[in-house]
Amino acid sequence: MSSFYSSNTAESCYYFVMSQLAKVNTIGEKFGPPYAVLNLSRVGLRYFRILIKSNSNSRARLVSHFIDHPNIGWIFSAAGWFNLGVGVWARDNAEINDISTQIRDVLGKGDEIVYQSELTSLYGFGDRVLGDTSPPMPIVDAVYSPLELSALEMDYIKLLTLDSSLSTNEFAEILGVSVQEVDMLNARLQQAGVIVGSQNRIQYQGKYCKVFVDTLSRKNENAVESLTARLWSDNRCIYVERANGKYDLEFEVVLDSERDLKPYLKDFSLYKTAILTTNFYTNLYPLSKTANLKEIREMLSGQSGSVIDFRNSKLWYLNHKAADAYLNIYENKKYFEVMEKSELDLFGEIGTYIQSENPDATFSLIDIGSGDGMKAEAFIKKLGEETVKAYYPVDIQPIELAAALRSNAEGTYAKHPTLLNIEKLGTRFPLRLQPNERQVYVFFGGTYGNYKSAIINAYLKPVLDSTSLMLIAMPIVAEQKSEEEILDSYASLQIEDVAFGPLVQMGLVKEQFKKNPSHPGLFVHLSLEESKVVSSFILDKDIELAGREFPSGTLFKMTTSWKPTLDQFTAALESDFAIEKIFRNEDMAIALVRAR
Image (cartoon, rainbow, N blue to C red):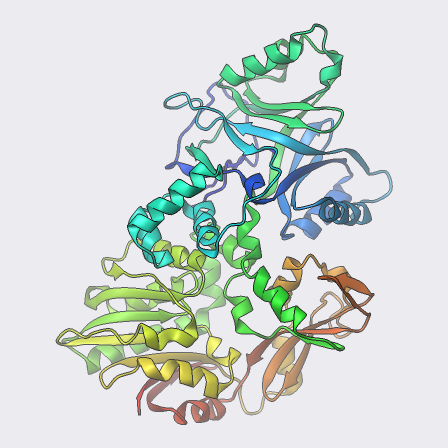
């Protein structure tokens, strides 16, 4: 497992990003606080590497096929023994065999898998150039009885994989526990060997060499011990690895020149080398990609027949796309602003209206289903940051709350992340008001339409008192818009990827499903049912999933998105709320409602 990549920002928590390695004379440049290093073999994950010689077309197809696969740890290119490497996290041989088969199906004539093996041990060394010498950290080791982590422990290590620089107080707020409990969590996981240390973010500069040694080719009895001892003390060495294949000793070093490898290999006659060049994809810790796997399996196990309905919003609080978006949160801001423009365009008018109606008030903003908190941050600026006393991002996923904290980190208002199911809003809110304070609840993004209006209204009503406000956003369609036009607006790869998320987490791939005849480049099928766009996938072949057989033609209904007219949206709200004002443009309506 190579970690020659690091994050381009201090917020990102991957090891090392080096897209193009350049030959220079220095070896270390520190650019961020330490992050946690975890040993995921302690929780039952095993690590495999597949090294491939492929042509450029096959490489592009393979990268496209696997770049969002939940088991893939990294994909990079190299020069030397192989030109494409794939790292795979798997729980058993069946899982790795399935992925190997998928890789073989993607490769073309003349392509070759030159090597495949499992790492039996892997040691990293932390920051070996800057600061004190660090002891080796076991990132993979032999584990015979994996740990069963509690839901709280799993949430905690998911947060660590995204941003271990959060303070203990922030961890405690996000997880909804005391600071003492966070300290106990950390101590337990360290004692169990899951958290093995920390490492400074460094961009290593030089030739990043990966070396595979057949230890049976040693020229003298002490060759392996001598090489290992040298690597253990060499600050140019990043990782030392043992594998179960022919080339059973591996190491990774950053050198000024490939010629500098010779002293390391003088006692062996058989070895292979490669220079790592371009990183395509990095996901060293795949935990965030199986955020709701238990719920997905439970949803599947309770259904039979030719239609399997996954349209439960609890499955959509976080998928791997959301985690990836968080890791590139600042790079994606421009994309975010373009994609959400119709909603953002209304924020200025709304902010001005609320200020004019409450000229001397201070505000607490409660962001229901906050996600990454970007919309709330944009709205607070329009409302007037100086008037905002506190921000409460509310979400079921700790990872999203961590993202919301980062999005609003520069805000002068207090932040109170709140881990809560939407159906339990009334147990925490409304807040106790101070004199001349207003609570503003925001439900942005159109999530309102993922529920039946009677159900979601029942969740929202308890938080409103006589002085609080609520903003509910909903994409709307014109009365004259045809069914075909509505469905075409949803025919995109982005919608398909979101809808397919739970099936990816179950280990399925799109190629197992029928293509959309109206949009041959897509696998998602779209239909309009009671003014709701339903995204579905239809099996093209018989499969086995979660111990069951599903025949070709089985329909998986994945998401529902209500596409109401303005009148329909208004009618749904009026049944339970008093509508004070509706702000709208061509594509979006945001209703300001109060308690009836």
